[in-house]
Image 1 (cartoon, rainbow, N blue to C red):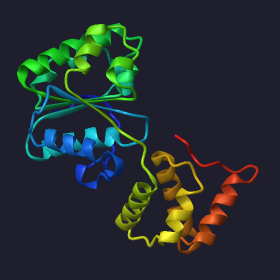
Image 2 (cartoon, one colour):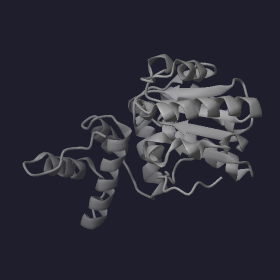
Image 3 (cartoon, rainbow, N blue to C red):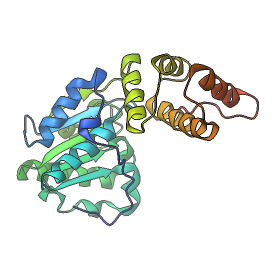
Length: 241
């Protein structure tokens, strides 16, 4: 289902590309849901920003639509300005992926609309895949019935990636671009910048461009030069989004 909205979509969000690491259980449950299994009324993933929740939700939608099903991805931070009437009829989809539930705080009309959408989806057999930074009981929602509904299904906490997972993600990104990333360089990089995936991957993209421009390989000395330049007066610090 295509909504007439400019929703930002991660073109790399594919379940097969997701490096699960510490979040293998979340990845397994999402894959089951995308394949049509319904172990519970809903699956809710919670954890800090930048650990792959949106990747899994978008990947599940891509998997469902790839086999001819109907899936809808709704990132609430991008949608609140459009009004909750847009949720009408979405329970006809096979899968509803509701992202950024925290953004509903302070929007009681949206909370009511999501509550009734949840009920309609449950009655119609539509799968619900949800994501938030906090577990349902801690979400800053004024509607207790909505928090209750969000707790009906399976609730899984997602964890930040450890060093081994970050290394695997960096090597995956390098391999997809045909880049040689020595193990020593990858270890040097993740031990000297904040281990948060958005910032780490943004920095890797910068190193890729710098390597191409300079005609140099991604060696430890070259990466050290780039990091030193970023941290020098007037330079940029590593992103911590």
